[in-house]
Image (cartoon, rainbow, N blue to C red; front, side, top):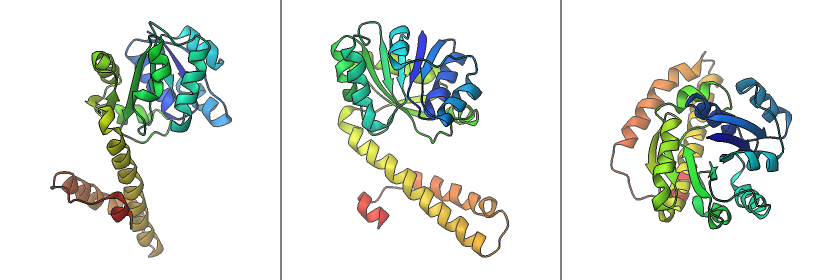
Length: 230
């Protein structure tokens, strides 16, 4: 397929690169800002920078690498221009929303997909290594789920279906896990650094990883996010 990227989030060029390695053709990226342009030039040096409309028109698979608050707005705007319709696949990558935010494109016959690799992106080639065998949360209308799952597999990840009714819980769990774990690890590293311990991350890393593995496979206590962050 012809793949285009719209948006400046670091995930955009990484997924585009992975799909290119799977055999798809990259046709352009609509990005703004020095950092976003540099990421494209580094990971995808031959990829032209173009307007959103040009990318949406030429691509068969359009990746919306925009903040969650902008997904619906961008989708509706490009749909109103007649750029999303049959034979188009529209993918967003926010963990916070399902495919329903792409409803405007779906009503015109496009394939709406929410696809979220469960990892943090730096926008560098290192992400491509992490992406391999990473779980990828996918959501799409039931008849179209095989397309979403196939796209996840082509990225090198393991697709995991999240129903629209499960999206709020998934989003909350992801936010709690990512923000809370980062805060605790940084606090532990800071304590060691303040004590003059050299390379504190190397010292604390093994216990963090073992604690996470232990927590993942123990029965989960009934605890809401507010209690966890208190």
